[in-house]
Length: 65
Image (tube, rainbow, N blue to C red):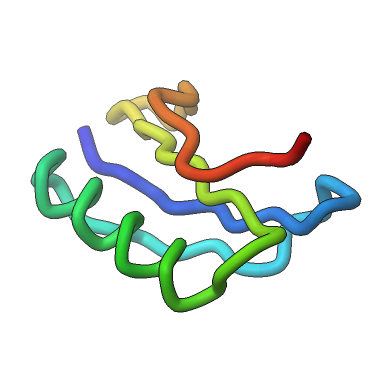
């Protein structure tokens, strides 16, 4: 399994997608740094990608009111 970071703007449009490797804690750290770099109003989703290509949203960093 590996992880992907998906950045979305306030219109829920994907603005950036990054492969983040296979270490979950490193992915969360990278996502938090990316969230800080982008600043509001962006959110960063942490997505797991299984070996057969299925994607599952695990966490959301940031968000919209």
